[in-house]
Image 1 (cartoon, rainbow, N blue to C red):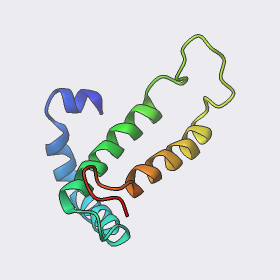
Image 2: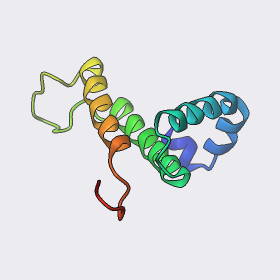
Image 3: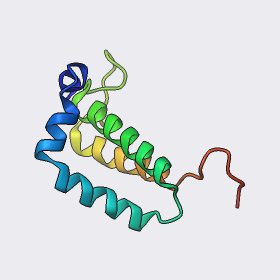
Length: 98
């Protein structure tokens, strides 16, 4: 993914091969988060994709050289879901706190 982004190919590849899936995915997020402004939703999805790519394909341990019992992908997945869920539910920066 990093190489595709770096070489400017990601938009073309995603558009050609994944656009129907991406569209359905964004629509599902819009239904789940109806109060989130569209631009904010798209940025959060963008951040989510980058976070997922790094967590799932990056280093196996957040602290290289230190043994970690939770470095496996299933454990990372659970932590990732919790982290991203909180990010999507966070209030919009600069908005009034309810």
